[in-house]
Length: 266
Image 1 (spheres, rainbow, N blue to C red):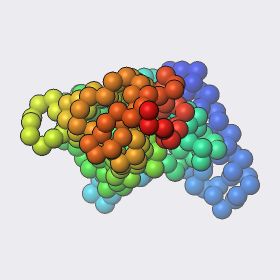
Image 2 (image 1 turned 180 degrees about the horizontal axis):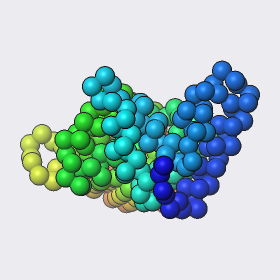
Image 3 (image 1 turned 45 degrees about the vertical axis):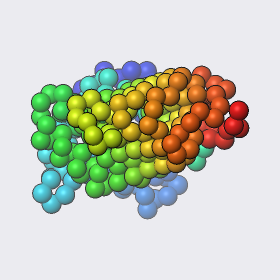
């Protein structure tokens, strides 16, 4: 049994998930067992998420019981489960295809990969690096998302579609960032140490964007689809192209929340 001091947002998000699962189980009895196993049999969001992630990431040689114990110990921490709740809320608010709270929790691999990262990151900070790398490995196999456990990622982050996302060891992603599929936050291959991008608050990273090296993408900036960014980007700038160049400026403080990928070159 998880003991968890839930924040008001965590409690609110969890109640939405429970209500939706209850309605879905009644409307579609064939799904009832699945919904009970992953949501309705659990007393809070941390307990349910630890069970769900452990079930997803387990294998013949990585038993679900081992993973669940590890995840329970970490996800019961209020700051960790609150970050997960913020990530769900961000997805509901920003993803036009997301009509409820239970869908990201159950089915969205961007959300699930991000929560797997949150567990592996805590293990990394605790010095349990082999276990952190095991969870990263299992998550990469399951979700086609590769986030190094040492990377630093804030809350209220939406990873949409997720397939092909790579976030390197020394990357930083601040709060309220939105990241589309096939994005790379990578190194240049020429340096060691601090070598990955720093993505500031409210940034929108379009599909296929490649951001390479220890460079900063300023607060509220937007990187257009398939751009290759090799130089720092100023706050609220829009960059596009290969190599990327400034083509305009955002009309909102946090384009990540608006999710408008269209721009006019200025």
